[in-house]
Length: 560
Image 1: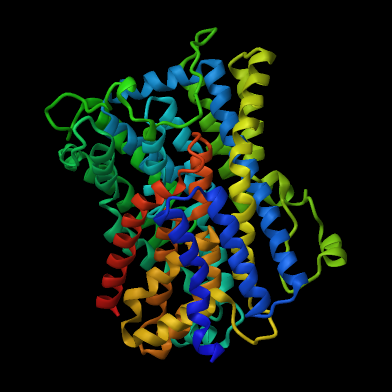
Image 2: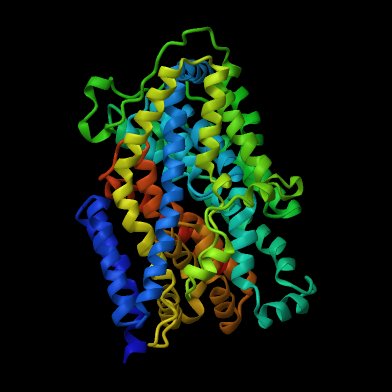
């Protein structure tokens, strides 16, 4: 009886989040404590996980929360430092010089620059960088968050130098004889790693087919929700430029994934896209013959568009060239790349500086939950703080201005802390629920097994949805892939279709799930002062998620 009901019970925490956050529009600071209690109760009394293991899963979640808050603080600190130094004034005029059209600006910043940052760092960093930058150049806070979240799909599978595939899929498939046997049977090699280039090429192909419309969707949502006329057709009129900007990224992205593997598609795709699109935008090519599209005047903005963060934009005390003004973002991208390339060894050296070492974990935190040392110096938030310090020198800021930026950033970060203090521990209890005396698989595994047994040979259609739900609760494409890749592979073999395609569908769905991932939305809202409005954002981004997952599923069903 319990085995039959387990999938429905496992789905109930997701339902709680959806109903409270999206349906009832409850702020995450109230919805996520209820979700945590629901998951913890299921783990303790139904899955019969020990109290110590639930406590350790919660503790692991709190460790991850501290790291997320560090990223949020760092992103805000960078924004406020540039505001105090006058750098934002120069950056804003720079975008106006490229194009005064807000539709063009949002494509350049989120789709192209955001893809580049995703390829460098991943883990929600693009939203932390791009969303406040949009607000700083004059976008309403709500439009900035929605725009930043909508592009969290196509670039994500190859984020952080390919981590969702190199770590998520690889670790998820490792240690299984059937996977190795399959790799040998198709002549790929003798281990899981030999399958990654095949998976990478399929993932990129799916993303290219489904994701090339994302810039067009982005501008249609922008004009439909935030234009003076609330008319999505104002976005559609930019179709030539939007599709050009999409293909300028996705074509190199797909070629790189097919020939070089999963490390560089997003990073190089975003960079190549910027080099191609910026000159075209400057010359006004492919743009409609009409005045540049603009938001209504600020005094006409509804309160629902505004955040509580007032981005201070000062005039530079001393002349700043565009290069010097942009240098903090150049440093962010460069240092992220420097620390993520294993061949350089910088990341490995920084990884040696940990908050908890293996010995302390073994002595005090040993449980069924795997707790890893916190690599302090590899956290993007620490990098942001370092770049802020360098910016103070480059922009010749006074100590009072620098201190003011830090103080304001700390106060803003506190507003996001309550929601995240329950969101991430809830996720960790959910994921680590497979060690209980009830002999049930973990909640996500029981949920996925229940879905697969119901749909049979039509599984490729729903495979991306499962990957997306994994990212929705886990907050990470990497974790979703780690949880479900082996399960997806086995289902593919059981129903007689190519399991490599099914795993690729999982990876694509997991990437699309970042558009609705609760803690990413909380973090993005926090950096522009929209805390408590997370449900409003997910109501919009959920439509894109279902488009993305279902289109990928239809393609997967046709291919397999």
